[in-house]
Image (cartoon, rainbow, N blue to C red; front, side, top):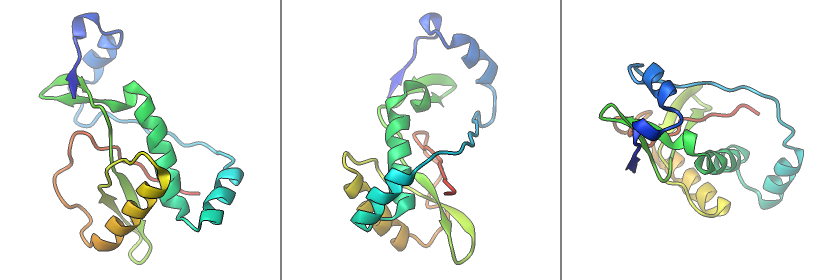
Length: 138
């Protein structure tokens, strides 16, 4: 994690607006053609959800603004953000499943599957600051 010098930061005005928000966040909803991606995932016999979360989180990690957080009231940039939200099909409730980001999708999918299967709690600990809460509805 690296703190940001607000005096030279191009996003300083936005920081001033959102710094006192309880949980500054945003939601994005869009349609996306995932036909080719779905075909690739099916050929590998992988979970679409875990694979899609990996792909989106990999992209989010490449965008510096998505890795910005407030730490002790100051803006900071994390090297990597982790985790996702997963729907429990039996209860239809979401649970936060913490999975460290991996270099390869197949490693992430395997770890996510194992972690989700072994985690019975909906929340395992207080939310860390490098969390990326993400859910998808294909």
